[in-house]
Amino acid sequence: MEYGGTEKQTALREISEETGLNAIFTPGFREEVTYRIADFINKAVVLFLTETNSMPVILESEIAEHRWVNAEKAKALLYPEYGLIIDKVEEILK
Image 1 (cartoon, rainbow, N blue to C red):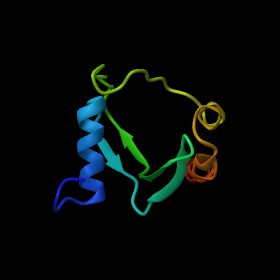
Image 2: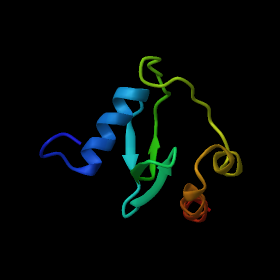
Image 3: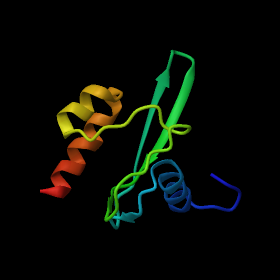
Image 4: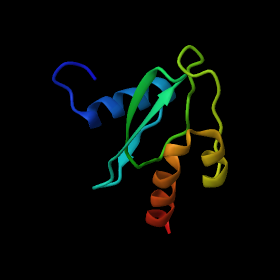
């Protein structure tokens, strides 16, 4: 986050810079997940649920790989700590 910026401002900026997407927040959804990387780095990530009306423009200098996947595939690709959040999103989207 930049000094004086909010979590949502940071998320909007990062989404736009890294994917070119125009994100529209789902009101009231904010989740945080924490996990360890390589047994010595603690990582904390704040997640928002958004929708978009644009197509991604991926900057290869920012993102090495991307793909659209369903919830089960996302759970298989991500750290296990994301599983409950993915389940929560699925319930919201039903």
